[in-house]
Every structure is written in C-alpha cells, then in structure tokens.
Amino acid sequence: MVRINLISGPRNISTALMYSFAQRIDTTVLDEPFYAFYLHKSGVIHPGGEDVLKSQPLDEIAVATSMFEEQTRPVLFIKNMAHHLELTDQRFLEDVTNIFLIRNPRQILASYAQVIETPTLRDIGIEYQLKLFHDLRAKGHQPTVVDSGHILENPESVLRQVCQRVGITFTKDMLQWEPGPKPYDGIWAKHWYANVHKSTGFDRQPTSNRPLPIHLEDVCHKAQYCYDKLVSFSLRP
Image (cartoon, rainbow, N blue to C red):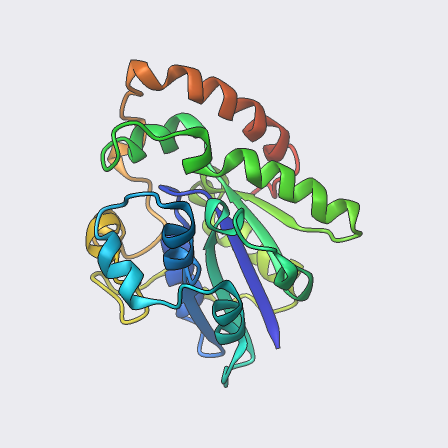
C-alpha cells in the first residue's frame, strides 16, 4: 500500500488536494484524523470544537491505529495539519510518504483571520513544518515540499511530479471534482470549507489577495522566515 501523509498548514488548498486524490478509484482519503486529539490535548477553542471532539478518538494511539485499519484500496491519502501532529509522538511518520504543503504566510494569516481573529505562529504550523522537515531529512527521509501557489499555477505539472515522487501514476481525474460537501469531509467542514465547496478544481480564489490585518504583521514576519526556507525545496511547475 502507498501511504501518503500530507502535512499542511491551515487555510491552504489542503482540502482541494484531498478532493483531488479522492477522484482516484484506487485511493481512500482521510480528513484530519488528529483534529479531535489536538483540541483535547491543547485546549484550543475552535468553531464547532465540541462536535469535533465527539466525532473522533481522543487518544493518539487509537487514531494512528484506525488510520491504517481495513484500508481496502492500494493508496491511502491522509490530510493532516502540522500543528495537530506537533502534539503527537510522530512514530507513524516513519511508515508513510510525507508531503509538506506550504503557502505564502501572508495569505494564510489573512484567510485564517476571517475565522479566528488573532492566529498565532503555532496555529498556522509553518514553524513546526520546517522543524519536522529537517528532522525527517536528518533520519534519511526525502520528504516532498509543494507550494500551493505552484499548484495553482500549473496543477497538472505539479501533481504529475507528486505522483511520481510517491510511486503512483497520475490521472487527469485528479484535476476536477463536483462542487459541494463530500462524504469524507470532517464534521468541521461547515466552519472551514465554504470556498472549497464552491470549487470544481484548482482555481485561484479572488480572496487570495485580501489584505493582512496590521496586528498580524509581526507573526507574518516570523512565519516568512520559515516559509522561505521550505519553499526553496518545493517542486516547480
């Protein structure tokens, strides 16, 4: 089985990428399996958090076990948030093919602030993405880095490279999907997925250039350092 583990920041195109892989007849997708564990362990308050806590196991061992149980298709795509994984012991990362999905932090923060007014550096996960990337490379792994801007520039080119990296064949079915909610969406979709539910492919959203609130300039500056380090490793169209 090919086990693909997406390590993304929030307010990226991670859900669109999950929808892309879900179009493959050989692939099962999982939406943020550690979300409830993260909320339970961190105490962070998110929109719809009580529903999330009721929808998933709260124990990380139970989550890690359930991810790989009874998977009948040859490809498994797991969409994870970097800040969710920061609180786990990460042992399962040794048994999956890891892909880091990054985005310009100015765009992430401007988008995130529409839901949670004052996101922190930890909330957007970029600092931990950089640390985990270097940790995996130090252990001899070769994780892939993908920038959402590069995907939007040329989806087919970047997805072909991603598929080659993970050892599967690209299919053009990955470029389009039906609009609306999906049965594999997490229960939190109504709070976070409004834009992607309107999409039918990798289209750049008109809100991508919304201005960054002034109070987030400092955290953006810190995040930019991490992003610049990671983007130098990213696949190019």
